[in-house]
Length: 451
Image (tube, rainbow, N blue to C red; front, side):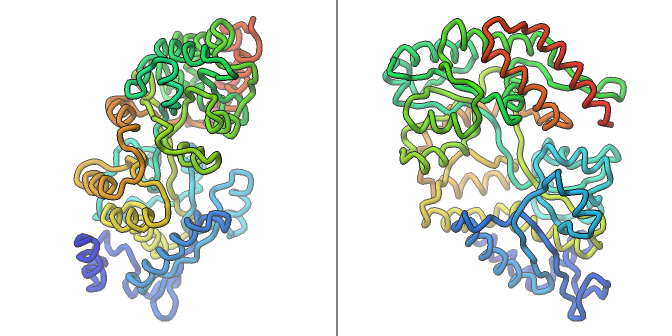
Protein backbone atom coordinates (compact mmCIF):
# COMPACT_ATOMS: atom_id res chain seq x y z
CA UNK A 1 0.00 0.00 0.00
CA UNK A 2 3.04 2.28 0.28
CA UNK A 3 2.90 3.05 -3.43
CA UNK A 4 -0.69 4.27 -3.15
CA UNK A 5 0.07 6.44 -0.15
CA UNK A 6 3.10 7.97 -1.85
CA UNK A 7 1.11 8.79 -4.95
CA UNK A 8 -1.64 10.37 -2.86
CA UNK A 9 0.88 12.65 -1.18
CA UNK A 10 2.26 13.68 -4.57
CA UNK A 11 -1.20 14.49 -5.89
CA UNK A 12 -2.09 16.38 -2.74
CA UNK A 13 1.07 18.43 -3.15
CA UNK A 14 0.04 19.37 -6.66
CA UNK A 15 2.85 17.48 -8.38
CA UNK A 16 0.32 15.63 -10.54
CA UNK A 17 -0.19 18.91 -12.42
CA UNK A 18 3.20 18.40 -14.02
CA UNK A 19 2.06 15.27 -15.85
CA UNK A 20 1.43 15.91 -19.49
CA UNK A 21 1.11 19.64 -19.10
CA UNK A 22 -1.24 18.80 -16.23
CA UNK A 23 -3.67 15.89 -16.38
CA UNK A 24 -6.11 17.97 -14.38
CA UNK A 25 -7.13 21.56 -14.87
CA UNK A 26 -5.01 22.75 -11.92
CA UNK A 27 -6.83 26.03 -11.50
CA UNK A 28 -7.39 26.65 -15.20
CA UNK A 29 -9.87 29.43 -15.89
CA UNK A 30 -11.08 27.72 -19.07
CA UNK A 31 -14.76 28.01 -19.79
CA UNK A 32 -15.10 24.26 -19.16
CA UNK A 33 -14.24 24.79 -15.50
CA UNK A 34 -16.51 26.35 -12.91
CA UNK A 35 -15.75 29.61 -11.09
CA UNK A 36 -13.94 27.61 -8.45
CA UNK A 37 -11.77 25.90 -11.08
CA UNK A 38 -13.57 22.57 -10.75
CA UNK A 39 -13.96 20.53 -13.94
CA UNK A 40 -16.96 18.20 -14.10
CA UNK A 41 -16.82 15.30 -16.54
CA UNK A 42 -19.57 12.90 -17.54
CA UNK A 43 -18.49 9.27 -17.78
CA UNK A 44 -20.45 6.10 -18.41
CA UNK A 45 -19.68 2.50 -17.51
CA UNK A 46 -21.18 2.69 -14.01
CA UNK A 47 -22.58 -0.74 -13.07
CA UNK A 48 -26.38 -0.92 -12.94
CA UNK A 49 -28.31 -1.29 -9.68
CA UNK A 50 -28.83 -4.97 -10.54
CA UNK A 51 -25.11 -5.41 -9.73
CA UNK A 52 -25.17 -3.96 -6.21
CA UNK A 53 -21.65 -4.95 -5.13
CA UNK A 54 -19.98 -3.62 -8.28
CA UNK A 55 -22.03 -0.44 -8.13
CA UNK A 56 -21.13 0.13 -4.48
CA UNK A 57 -17.44 -0.26 -5.32
CA UNK A 58 -17.77 2.14 -8.24
CA UNK A 59 -19.52 4.81 -6.19
CA UNK A 60 -16.94 4.47 -3.42
CA UNK A 61 -14.16 4.87 -5.97
CA UNK A 62 -15.73 8.04 -7.34
CA UNK A 63 -15.79 9.54 -3.84
CA UNK A 64 -12.19 8.50 -3.18
CA UNK A 65 -11.02 9.91 -6.50
CA UNK A 66 -12.80 13.23 -5.96
CA UNK A 67 -11.27 13.51 -2.50
CA UNK A 68 -7.79 13.07 -3.97
CA UNK A 69 -8.60 15.33 -6.94
CA UNK A 70 -10.59 18.27 -5.52
CA UNK A 71 -10.64 20.04 -8.89
CA UNK A 72 -12.43 17.17 -10.66
CA UNK A 73 -16.03 16.01 -10.29
CA UNK A 74 -17.32 12.76 -11.79
CA UNK A 75 -20.87 12.69 -13.16
CA UNK A 76 -21.17 8.91 -13.56
CA UNK A 77 -23.84 7.24 -15.65
CA UNK A 78 -24.87 3.72 -16.48
CA UNK A 79 -24.52 2.27 -19.96
CA UNK A 80 -21.94 1.74 -22.66
CA UNK A 81 -21.46 2.72 -26.29
CA UNK A 82 -24.67 1.75 -28.12
CA UNK A 83 -24.12 1.88 -31.91
CA UNK A 84 -27.87 2.41 -32.46
CA UNK A 85 -28.03 5.65 -30.48
CA UNK A 86 -24.42 6.84 -30.50
CA UNK A 87 -24.53 9.21 -33.48
CA UNK A 88 -27.77 10.80 -32.31
CA UNK A 89 -26.35 11.33 -28.79
CA UNK A 90 -23.21 12.91 -30.23
CA UNK A 91 -25.15 15.19 -32.58
CA UNK A 92 -27.57 16.17 -29.82
CA UNK A 93 -24.87 16.97 -27.29
CA UNK A 94 -25.91 14.06 -25.05
CA UNK A 95 -22.78 11.92 -25.41
CA UNK A 96 -20.68 11.57 -22.27
CA UNK A 97 -17.24 13.22 -22.17
CA UNK A 98 -15.69 9.79 -21.54
CA UNK A 99 -17.51 6.81 -22.99
CA UNK A 100 -17.11 3.03 -22.80
CA UNK A 101 -16.33 1.00 -25.92
CA UNK A 102 -15.46 -2.56 -26.90
CA UNK A 103 -12.31 -3.27 -28.90
CA UNK A 104 -14.49 -3.69 -32.00
CA UNK A 105 -15.66 -0.04 -31.82
CA UNK A 106 -12.64 2.32 -31.98
CA UNK A 107 -11.58 1.79 -35.60
CA UNK A 108 -14.92 2.94 -36.99
CA UNK A 109 -15.35 5.73 -34.44
CA UNK A 110 -11.89 7.11 -35.19
CA UNK A 111 -12.47 6.91 -38.93
CA UNK A 112 -15.72 8.87 -38.61
CA UNK A 113 -14.17 11.54 -36.38
CA UNK A 114 -16.30 10.53 -33.39
CA UNK A 115 -13.48 10.40 -30.87
CA UNK A 116 -10.96 12.98 -29.63
CA UNK A 117 -7.23 12.60 -30.22
CA UNK A 118 -5.68 12.47 -26.74
CA UNK A 119 -2.05 12.01 -27.81
CA UNK A 120 -0.77 15.35 -26.51
CA UNK A 121 -2.36 14.80 -23.11
CA UNK A 122 -0.92 11.40 -22.17
CA UNK A 123 2.78 12.15 -21.89
CA UNK A 124 3.92 11.05 -18.46
CA UNK A 125 0.74 9.17 -17.52
CA UNK A 126 1.78 6.62 -14.86
CA UNK A 127 2.28 3.08 -16.18
CA UNK A 128 1.01 3.88 -19.67
CA UNK A 129 4.38 2.84 -21.09
CA UNK A 130 3.79 -0.63 -19.61
CA UNK A 131 0.38 -1.22 -21.19
CA UNK A 132 0.75 -3.90 -23.85
CA UNK A 133 1.30 -2.34 -27.25
CA UNK A 134 -1.36 -4.45 -28.98
CA UNK A 135 -4.08 -2.96 -26.78
CA UNK A 136 -2.96 0.61 -27.37
CA UNK A 137 -2.98 -0.10 -31.11
CA UNK A 138 -6.72 -0.75 -30.86
CA UNK A 139 -7.14 2.94 -30.00
CA UNK A 140 -4.57 4.24 -32.50
CA UNK A 141 -5.77 5.91 -35.69
CA UNK A 142 -4.29 5.77 -39.18
CA UNK A 143 -2.74 9.17 -38.39
CA UNK A 144 -0.82 7.65 -35.47
CA UNK A 145 -2.89 9.50 -32.90
CA UNK A 146 -4.14 7.87 -29.69
CA UNK A 147 -7.90 8.09 -29.26
CA UNK A 148 -8.58 6.11 -26.10
CA UNK A 149 -7.30 3.86 -23.33
CA UNK A 150 -8.01 0.18 -22.59
CA UNK A 151 -9.45 -0.87 -19.25
CA UNK A 152 -10.02 -4.62 -19.62
CA UNK A 153 -8.82 -7.53 -21.72
CA UNK A 154 -9.68 -11.16 -22.27
CA UNK A 155 -8.19 -14.12 -24.12
CA UNK A 156 -10.26 -17.09 -25.20
CA UNK A 157 -9.36 -20.61 -24.13
CA UNK A 158 -11.30 -23.72 -23.09
CA UNK A 159 -13.45 -24.00 -19.97
CA UNK A 160 -13.70 -27.65 -18.92
CA UNK A 161 -15.34 -29.83 -16.29
CA UNK A 162 -12.59 -31.47 -14.25
CA UNK A 163 -14.88 -34.15 -12.84
CA UNK A 164 -15.96 -35.30 -16.32
CA UNK A 165 -12.32 -35.39 -17.39
CA UNK A 166 -11.52 -37.75 -14.52
CA UNK A 167 -14.55 -39.95 -15.18
CA UNK A 168 -13.50 -40.20 -18.83
CA UNK A 169 -9.96 -41.23 -17.86
CA UNK A 170 -8.45 -37.87 -18.82
CA UNK A 171 -5.95 -35.95 -16.72
CA UNK A 172 -7.66 -32.69 -15.63
CA UNK A 173 -4.25 -31.11 -15.06
CA UNK A 174 -3.25 -31.80 -18.68
CA UNK A 175 -6.11 -30.58 -20.89
CA UNK A 176 -5.93 -30.72 -24.72
CA UNK A 177 -3.45 -28.47 -26.53
CA UNK A 178 -4.47 -29.33 -30.12
CA UNK A 179 -7.87 -29.57 -31.79
CA UNK A 180 -7.26 -33.24 -32.50
CA UNK A 181 -6.83 -33.74 -28.75
CA UNK A 182 -10.00 -31.75 -28.11
CA UNK A 183 -11.85 -34.02 -30.52
CA UNK A 184 -10.52 -37.17 -28.84
CA UNK A 185 -11.33 -35.86 -25.35
CA UNK A 186 -14.86 -34.96 -26.50
CA UNK A 187 -15.35 -38.54 -27.73
CA UNK A 188 -14.35 -40.00 -24.38
CA UNK A 189 -16.52 -37.57 -22.43
CA UNK A 190 -19.50 -38.11 -24.75
CA UNK A 191 -19.13 -41.85 -24.26
CA UNK A 192 -20.02 -41.42 -20.57
CA UNK A 193 -23.69 -41.27 -21.63
CA UNK A 194 -26.59 -39.88 -19.60
CA UNK A 195 -26.89 -36.89 -21.91
CA UNK A 196 -23.28 -35.83 -21.53
CA UNK A 197 -21.95 -33.61 -24.34
CA UNK A 198 -18.25 -33.56 -25.10
CA UNK A 199 -17.95 -30.10 -26.67
CA UNK A 200 -20.39 -27.27 -27.40
CA UNK A 201 -20.16 -24.04 -29.35
CA UNK A 202 -22.15 -20.90 -30.15
CA UNK A 203 -23.75 -20.16 -33.52
CA UNK A 204 -26.17 -17.22 -33.21
CA UNK A 205 -26.49 -13.56 -32.20
CA UNK A 206 -23.02 -12.82 -33.65
CA UNK A 207 -21.48 -15.18 -31.11
CA UNK A 208 -21.04 -17.90 -33.72
CA UNK A 209 -19.04 -15.57 -35.94
CA UNK A 210 -16.99 -14.47 -32.95
CA UNK A 211 -16.07 -18.05 -32.10
CA UNK A 212 -15.45 -19.02 -35.72
CA UNK A 213 -12.95 -16.13 -35.80
CA UNK A 214 -11.16 -17.68 -32.81
CA UNK A 215 -11.16 -21.10 -34.53
CA UNK A 216 -9.57 -19.62 -37.65
CA UNK A 217 -6.96 -17.70 -35.66
CA UNK A 218 -6.03 -20.83 -33.72
CA UNK A 219 -5.45 -22.68 -36.99
CA UNK A 220 -3.11 -20.06 -38.34
CA UNK A 221 -5.53 -18.05 -40.46
CA UNK A 222 -7.15 -14.63 -40.53
CA UNK A 223 -10.66 -13.32 -40.99
CA UNK A 224 -9.57 -10.16 -42.82
CA UNK A 225 -6.26 -8.81 -44.10
CA UNK A 226 -5.17 -5.46 -45.46
CA UNK A 227 -3.46 -5.61 -48.84
CA UNK A 228 -2.35 -2.58 -50.84
CA UNK A 229 -4.33 -0.31 -48.57
CA UNK A 230 -7.59 -2.26 -48.82
CA UNK A 231 -9.21 -4.77 -46.46
CA UNK A 232 -10.46 -8.09 -47.82
CA UNK A 233 -11.87 -11.34 -46.46
CA UNK A 234 -9.21 -13.97 -45.71
CA UNK A 235 -11.11 -16.89 -44.15
CA UNK A 236 -11.79 -18.70 -47.45
CA UNK A 237 -8.54 -20.51 -46.76
CA UNK A 238 -7.07 -23.77 -45.51
CA UNK A 239 -7.49 -22.56 -41.92
CA UNK A 240 -11.09 -21.56 -42.56
CA UNK A 241 -11.91 -24.93 -44.11
CA UNK A 242 -10.11 -26.92 -41.41
CA UNK A 243 -12.08 -25.11 -38.71
CA UNK A 244 -15.44 -25.86 -40.32
CA UNK A 245 -14.46 -29.43 -41.13
CA UNK A 246 -13.48 -30.07 -37.52
CA UNK A 247 -16.79 -28.67 -36.29
CA UNK A 248 -18.68 -30.71 -38.90
CA UNK A 249 -16.91 -33.93 -37.97
CA UNK A 250 -17.36 -33.45 -34.24
CA UNK A 251 -21.05 -32.71 -34.79
CA UNK A 252 -21.96 -35.36 -37.38
CA UNK A 253 -19.25 -38.06 -37.39
CA UNK A 254 -18.38 -38.22 -33.70
CA UNK A 255 -21.74 -36.89 -32.48
CA UNK A 256 -20.02 -35.32 -29.48
CA UNK A 257 -21.66 -31.88 -29.75
CA UNK A 258 -25.20 -32.96 -28.95
CA UNK A 259 -28.29 -32.66 -31.13
CA UNK A 260 -29.40 -29.24 -29.91
CA UNK A 261 -27.74 -26.44 -31.86
CA UNK A 262 -28.20 -22.70 -32.54
CA UNK A 263 -26.74 -22.04 -29.11
CA UNK A 264 -25.51 -18.85 -27.51
CA UNK A 265 -23.48 -18.18 -24.39
CA UNK A 266 -26.34 -18.54 -21.88
CA UNK A 267 -27.26 -21.96 -23.31
CA UNK A 268 -23.74 -23.30 -23.09
CA UNK A 269 -23.16 -21.91 -19.60
CA UNK A 270 -26.33 -23.69 -18.49
CA UNK A 271 -25.03 -26.95 -19.98
CA UNK A 272 -21.75 -26.54 -18.13
CA UNK A 273 -23.56 -25.61 -14.93
CA UNK A 274 -25.67 -28.78 -15.16
CA UNK A 275 -22.54 -30.93 -15.09
CA UNK A 276 -23.33 -32.42 -18.50
CA UNK A 277 -20.79 -30.57 -20.69
CA UNK A 278 -17.13 -31.40 -21.01
CA UNK A 279 -15.66 -28.33 -22.75
CA UNK A 280 -16.46 -25.11 -24.52
CA UNK A 281 -14.53 -22.12 -25.84
CA UNK A 282 -14.63 -19.10 -23.51
CA UNK A 283 -12.62 -16.75 -21.36
CA UNK A 284 -11.93 -17.40 -17.66
CA UNK A 285 -14.54 -14.78 -16.74
CA UNK A 286 -17.24 -17.34 -17.55
CA UNK A 287 -16.43 -19.38 -14.44
CA UNK A 288 -17.91 -17.02 -11.80
CA UNK A 289 -21.14 -16.83 -13.80
CA UNK A 290 -21.46 -20.62 -13.86
CA UNK A 291 -20.55 -20.99 -10.19
CA UNK A 292 -23.01 -18.35 -8.98
CA UNK A 293 -25.96 -19.08 -11.27
CA UNK A 294 -25.86 -22.86 -10.95
CA UNK A 295 -24.52 -23.25 -7.40
CA UNK A 296 -21.33 -24.97 -8.43
CA UNK A 297 -17.84 -24.79 -6.94
CA UNK A 298 -14.76 -23.12 -8.41
CA UNK A 299 -12.92 -26.40 -7.85
CA UNK A 300 -15.21 -28.03 -10.46
CA UNK A 301 -13.68 -26.17 -13.41
CA UNK A 302 -10.38 -25.74 -15.19
CA UNK A 303 -9.23 -23.40 -17.93
CA UNK A 304 -7.01 -24.48 -20.81
CA UNK A 305 -5.20 -22.32 -23.31
CA UNK A 306 -6.55 -22.14 -26.84
CA UNK A 307 -5.47 -25.11 -28.98
CA UNK A 308 -3.17 -24.16 -31.85
CA UNK A 309 -0.79 -21.21 -32.11
CA UNK A 310 -2.98 -18.14 -31.63
CA UNK A 311 -6.02 -16.98 -29.72
CA UNK A 312 -8.58 -14.25 -30.00
CA UNK A 313 -8.11 -11.48 -27.50
CA UNK A 314 -10.54 -8.68 -26.99
CA UNK A 315 -11.56 -6.22 -24.40
CA UNK A 316 -12.89 -2.80 -23.61
CA UNK A 317 -11.80 0.73 -22.93
CA UNK A 318 -12.83 4.35 -23.04
CA UNK A 319 -12.80 7.05 -25.68
CA UNK A 320 -13.44 10.79 -25.49
CA UNK A 321 -16.15 12.98 -26.92
CA UNK A 322 -14.63 14.92 -29.84
CA UNK A 323 -16.36 18.06 -28.51
CA UNK A 324 -14.79 17.74 -25.04
CA UNK A 325 -12.51 20.59 -23.96
CA UNK A 326 -8.82 19.97 -23.24
CA UNK A 327 -9.56 20.33 -19.51
CA UNK A 328 -12.23 17.64 -19.66
CA UNK A 329 -9.93 15.33 -21.63
CA UNK A 330 -7.12 15.80 -19.10
CA UNK A 331 -9.51 15.15 -16.22
CA UNK A 332 -10.88 12.09 -17.99
CA UNK A 333 -7.41 10.65 -18.49
CA UNK A 334 -6.65 11.19 -14.82
CA UNK A 335 -9.84 9.32 -13.85
CA UNK A 336 -9.18 6.41 -16.21
CA UNK A 337 -5.60 5.95 -15.06
CA UNK A 338 -6.56 6.13 -11.38
CA UNK A 339 -9.57 3.84 -11.69
CA UNK A 340 -8.57 1.32 -14.36
CA UNK A 341 -4.86 1.52 -15.14
CA UNK A 342 -3.44 1.72 -11.65
CA UNK A 343 -1.52 -1.32 -10.39
CA UNK A 344 -0.84 0.58 -7.15
CA UNK A 345 -4.52 0.08 -6.25
CA UNK A 346 -4.59 -3.66 -6.99
CA UNK A 347 -3.84 -4.71 -3.41
CA UNK A 348 -6.61 -2.47 -2.08
CA UNK A 349 -9.09 -3.69 -4.71
CA UNK A 350 -8.28 -7.36 -4.11
CA UNK A 351 -8.59 -7.03 -0.34
CA UNK A 352 -11.90 -5.22 -0.70
CA UNK A 353 -13.26 -7.79 -3.12
CA UNK A 354 -12.08 -10.78 -1.08
CA UNK A 355 -14.20 -9.56 1.84
CA UNK A 356 -17.33 -9.68 -0.30
CA UNK A 357 -17.15 -13.18 -1.80
CA UNK A 358 -15.74 -11.89 -5.09
CA UNK A 359 -13.35 -14.29 -6.86
CA UNK A 360 -9.71 -13.22 -6.75
CA UNK A 361 -7.05 -14.96 -8.78
CA UNK A 362 -8.79 -15.73 -12.06
CA UNK A 363 -6.38 -15.22 -14.99
CA UNK A 364 -7.95 -11.97 -16.22
CA UNK A 365 -7.02 -8.48 -17.42
CA UNK A 366 -3.44 -8.96 -18.49
CA UNK A 367 -3.11 -5.39 -19.72
CA UNK A 368 0.34 -4.71 -18.32
CA UNK A 369 3.93 -5.84 -18.67
CA UNK A 370 6.98 -5.20 -16.50
CA UNK A 371 6.76 -3.71 -13.03
CA UNK A 372 3.05 -2.98 -13.36
CA UNK A 373 2.25 -6.62 -14.12
CA UNK A 374 4.47 -7.80 -11.26
CA UNK A 375 2.62 -5.56 -8.79
CA UNK A 376 -0.73 -6.93 -9.85
CA UNK A 377 0.46 -10.55 -9.78
CA UNK A 378 1.80 -10.12 -6.24
CA UNK A 379 -1.52 -8.82 -4.97
CA UNK A 380 -3.54 -11.49 -6.78
CA UNK A 381 -1.42 -14.24 -5.23
CA UNK A 382 -1.82 -12.81 -1.73
CA UNK A 383 -5.60 -12.56 -1.88
CA UNK A 384 -6.43 -15.46 -4.19
CA UNK A 385 -9.57 -17.33 -3.11
CA UNK A 386 -10.04 -19.58 -6.14
CA UNK A 387 -7.97 -22.68 -7.06
CA UNK A 388 -4.90 -21.31 -8.83
CA UNK A 389 -3.75 -24.73 -9.98
CA UNK A 390 -6.89 -25.16 -12.09
CA UNK A 391 -5.82 -22.21 -14.27
CA UNK A 392 -2.17 -23.11 -14.65
CA UNK A 393 -2.70 -24.75 -18.09
CA UNK A 394 -4.28 -21.53 -19.36
CA UNK A 395 -1.67 -19.19 -17.88
CA UNK A 396 1.30 -21.20 -19.12
CA UNK A 397 -0.03 -21.80 -22.60
CA UNK A 398 -1.63 -18.40 -23.13
CA UNK A 399 1.70 -16.67 -22.51
CA UNK A 400 3.13 -18.31 -25.64
CA UNK A 401 0.16 -17.78 -27.96
CA UNK A 402 -0.16 -14.97 -30.43
CA UNK A 403 -2.91 -12.64 -29.20
CA UNK A 404 -4.98 -11.50 -32.18
CA UNK A 405 -7.68 -8.85 -31.98
CA UNK A 406 -11.03 -8.86 -33.73
CA UNK A 407 -11.33 -7.83 -37.39
CA UNK A 408 -12.60 -4.39 -38.45
CA UNK A 409 -16.39 -4.06 -38.67
CA UNK A 410 -16.40 -7.19 -36.52
CA UNK A 411 -20.07 -7.26 -35.57
CA UNK A 412 -21.23 -7.00 -39.18
CA UNK A 413 -18.80 -9.74 -40.17
CA UNK A 414 -19.94 -11.94 -37.30
CA UNK A 415 -23.51 -11.73 -38.54
CA UNK A 416 -22.37 -13.28 -41.83
CA UNK A 417 -20.21 -15.89 -40.14
CA UNK A 418 -23.07 -16.90 -37.83
CA UNK A 419 -24.75 -18.33 -40.92
CA UNK A 420 -21.66 -20.35 -41.79
CA UNK A 421 -21.50 -21.85 -38.30
CA UNK A 422 -25.22 -22.57 -38.28
CA UNK A 423 -25.13 -24.36 -41.63
CA UNK A 424 -22.28 -26.66 -40.63
CA UNK A 425 -23.84 -27.53 -37.27
CA UNK A 426 -27.39 -28.09 -38.55
CA UNK A 427 -26.87 -29.57 -42.04
CA UNK A 428 -24.90 -32.78 -42.37
CA UNK A 429 -24.41 -32.24 -46.11
CA UNK A 430 -23.37 -28.57 -45.82
CA UNK A 431 -21.05 -27.52 -48.68
CA UNK A 432 -18.12 -25.98 -46.82
CA UNK A 433 -16.40 -24.56 -49.91
CA UNK A 434 -19.59 -22.88 -51.09
CA UNK A 435 -20.35 -21.52 -47.63
CA UNK A 436 -16.90 -19.93 -47.43
CA UNK A 437 -17.04 -18.49 -50.93
CA UNK A 438 -20.46 -16.93 -50.41
CA UNK A 439 -19.54 -15.54 -47.00
CA UNK A 440 -16.27 -14.09 -48.32
CA UNK A 441 -18.15 -12.09 -50.97
CA UNK A 442 -20.47 -10.63 -48.35
CA UNK A 443 -17.59 -9.77 -46.02
CA UNK A 444 -15.65 -8.14 -48.86
CA UNK A 445 -18.62 -5.83 -49.27
CA UNK A 446 -18.64 -5.01 -45.56
CA UNK A 447 -14.92 -4.25 -45.62
CA UNK A 448 -15.17 -1.71 -48.44
CA UNK A 449 -16.11 0.92 -45.85
CA UNK A 450 -12.93 0.33 -43.82
CA UNK A 451 -9.84 2.41 -44.54
